Image: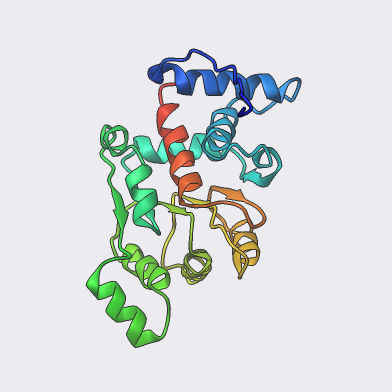
Length: 214
């Protein structure tokens, strides 16, 4: 006779799953006290990844959340390094403040520039963003070369981002690229170490957007 496995499941309606998930996260945090402005960002990243390591990994510059939200209120647009991150960001919420989400990674001119210069598309897409002449927030979840290029553009006074979300995932140059952004003279939210991803970049953007009325 086959063994019978009995699993007790919570009776949670689809529309209540996110709410219940955040309740569980809060419970598991226990007595850990989070900065009230940073807490929604950290919790949404944990909700997205089911990884409590982000309690220690996420680094915020001084007044980062306030400054990111002020930039959004003033119409800043968001540039991502993947279509996945772009698709995950709530564009309707951003549009309320006049902003758009861009990803140039698939653009033909970006591919041509990368080939001509012997660089990556991520580098070329940061150059294209710098030429827009708009107030920009960068949400990088995949390409460390994008962060390196942003650092170089800032160093050379060719761009002044309103904020950088630096959360690429991986093993090659990821840690080093993130450490560069920690030295940057602009607001940042960075996931130190190897962890991150496009889903994390989108989650941070959404946490900022969903808390705009707070």
